[in-house]
Image 1 (cartoon, helix red, strand yellow):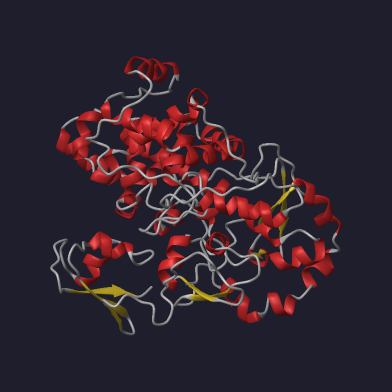
Image 2: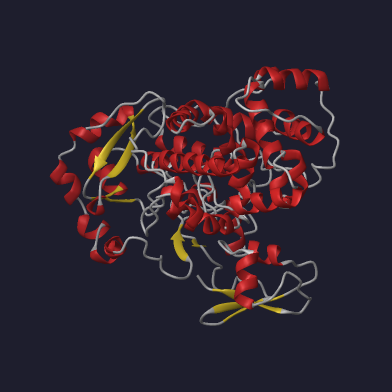
Length: 498
């Protein structure tokens, strides 16, 4: 039966299974190349108007889920591009900032300079809505993270990296294709034993992805022997950090800093800024937001295929509540026949689930919800999803944020793929997910059976072009087209089909 945990979120037990240090040399090159383009803040959206909502009741499933989706997909967080050279004004003096930084009693030395100060100001003073949501999620997620980092003997403060990676959003997906709260690329996730199939993506599993992140950081520290450098390696890869060390001729972080990839230089300062804001949020008047998470959860091990809709219709547990706590099941199916799957439910729903007759539960609409055609992907773990965009028919009560959450994408991408001019949806409206709707692709794109052809426009770069296609990277475009980083207006770029 379920194992009640009081830490407030996924509490499935994990067996430590870290990669042996002796294997690090063999896999380092692969890990490095796959982390090079990861950007901790790319998945965050531009500001949206705040939503005014009453506090949801425990039974208001749709309201809870809508509030959860809103907290994930509505954010005011963005980092100014000139943050390294800017001078931000703070209502707190430098002396107070430095004194507070020292009082945080870190496990390793924290730097303080103009760049670090700017990030401290950004997180503590300039992004109140985003930080309020993070503070609201913290009681549920931080204890689980602390348990994972403690298991591997790591500084517990590393938990704050999840803020700069994704603002603690398990549904986050970067333009480079990194997924989940800890923003794992596909190959790196596989190296750290995260299961990715047609039905499960454990990069979105809050417990298992945290365990994998802890093991990656442990391995990075074993190689680099310095925490600021190991933290930087999480963003750009161990190889890129080692290259920067060789060029700098030292392992001093600020001496290595100018030689790190541009997108990585702000990573440690951002980490310090997020840590500072989480420590002193009360001094800035920040109040944790209500994110709609249940106070307690229960977990069950499922050993047969089970659809969320079967649980809803037999046990009376709203499908949206199930989806909220189990984001790793990307098709609303627990493929338990391939191995035990952990199902997390609000604790107040546990009795209803246990009271449901197992035979009735698994048999209910099984021929429809778990047909052979639907489940054929479970026979081949890791099988690729069907090519082309998915069709979604809008149902009553659905919003753009809720639909985006269901498919692990963002409202902004749904707008782009479907050429939407507003967020108003109609029941029965068809949306395309994962690609452009027919006739909606940009005019500069033509297609063939194996690739799309993009014509370079003024102002385009390979990074900007890659960002238009989910999962694409500038590096892959260069390799596929056998070109360098320099491109010209009118040049045709082949975009490989997934």
